[in-house]
Image (cartoon, rainbow, N blue to C red; front, side, top):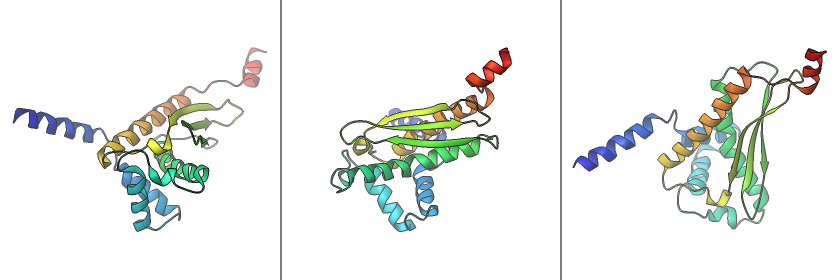
Length: 176
């Protein structure tokens, strides 16, 4: 009985650390982008994220590069957008998400901060992921995974904004 309560408390504590329902957030982002209607977005995310690896939908497609690229964009961009909403961005800044898709190994997801004003860009996230292995046993595990990436990006973005590094050109101007 005591073990059950301990497991229950741990589960509740883990959920308290999660800021939003990430599966719902990603679903809403897909619908808002016009990519698909709500019912189709729910099916898409359920089929592509919840279950056992490997993700057969990514392995059995006729266009694996495009399918994996679309899947990772649909997954990471809402997380990046959420982090950028929670950190006040200067007006001259931009955030970009870049993908390097691999059909045989880890794909790379890079989130880069461009501060503007000729300052060097900064890497906020480099996440290596096998898209077809990106499956979760339940929604709670996905929410924890997404929350972790959200916090990494948010923390790195806040640090990049408060401590901008000087570009080589700007550094020369300062020393001259």
